[in-house]
Image: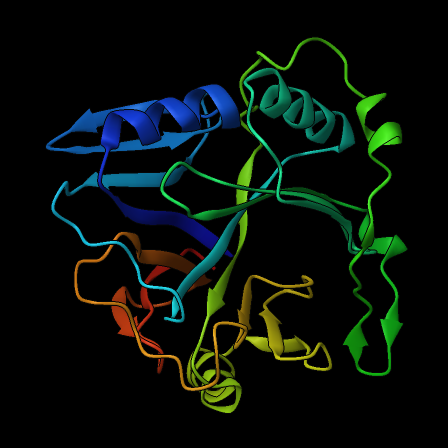
Length: 256
């Protein structure tokens, strides 16, 4: 499973305000030029680290495609829909992925964000040895009607970081690293230019794509965007790793 996602941002207060107002996250700690945010009383999902001198991540480089905030149910996804719109922010997309329903947007510094809810696992279907996933239009009218209360309520404590999706330079090397090296299972490899991996039968904890270009280089050291993300595995020894595209992972154990 995925733990905290850490980002370098140029304007910490602007980014924090966006996360609190538009995403509905709450600040847990704020110190030494960084803030940690999560659901209301829940675990930390996002760390923002300030570096006003950090260069922008250039187009056509590896790094974060999006981080994905998983809400507990469809009513919470509907509240997220209203919260974003009530704060005057725009979505970049909305999709029915068969296993989930998802909303997409970008933060003030251009980082991609997905907010989604999973369908029950007994509704997931398979296609051969893969979990069946697609990108179909999301019924936004039906979703909007699910909301109870206002969009001003914070995300609940049951909100988690469901997955991360990365821009990578090459799919085969990515599969070797995450599947053979870190032990994740490939769940979907038939999606054009992309690969999805997970543990525990989930549809994906890590997504990877070459949509920024085959052979894309990493961004400059210290660029805005992804610093690292946590990958949590039972019994794992804490360590750091860097995938073949330069994306950093902090591997953290949990009791078996």
